[in-house]
Length: 115
Length: 113
Image (cartoon, rainbow over all chains, first blue to last red; front, side, top):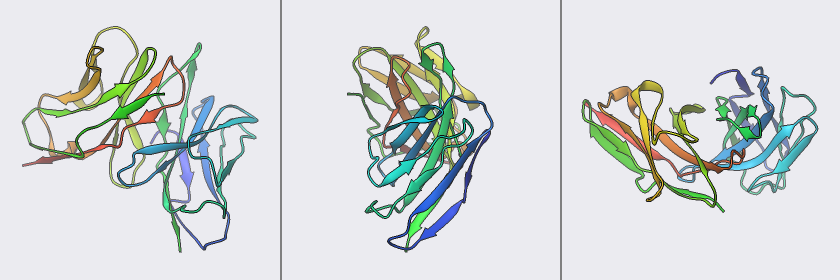
């Protein structure tokens, strides 16, 4: 899982609560990403950030928020507006070579369960 | 828009036999193609990528993939499967070196003795 850490490994949330998932990388990568994985659906991009203090919505950003105050950190908040948040969440990062991005490296994931 | 299809939900192969996990894609522009592997309750591990150059790409753990522009496909192969290769495999594509990856739905590989 390289130099990317995610915490906690398991997270339980009651309906109506906001929760924040942590993602930290010590790879000095410029770009960071959040994906959601559901059985049989592959990975879907929630948010990504190419540089500090800037981020873009992915394909399923509704009900989620992020910040990128430091290069090493890209926390994801799952808000109460997310209707079906139970899933496995994966953080990734990548470097840039010229104008192209290299392969993404993934953290170990956080499994979120809504009770 | 870009898309990836992995037509087989599961592939079963006997240990020692060759394996193939299929991937087809659709992009406008030059594709950047990737294969990742995932073990249960773990993150994804990078196996190999095609950017440009030789159509046959060699990667980690004895895996290789062949880029075929005309089909278009990027099938993952290994000459001799191991039980430890049993895992979930994902194909992904981006265009022009961009950082937005589109993933397939995954193929579960099961290697049996």
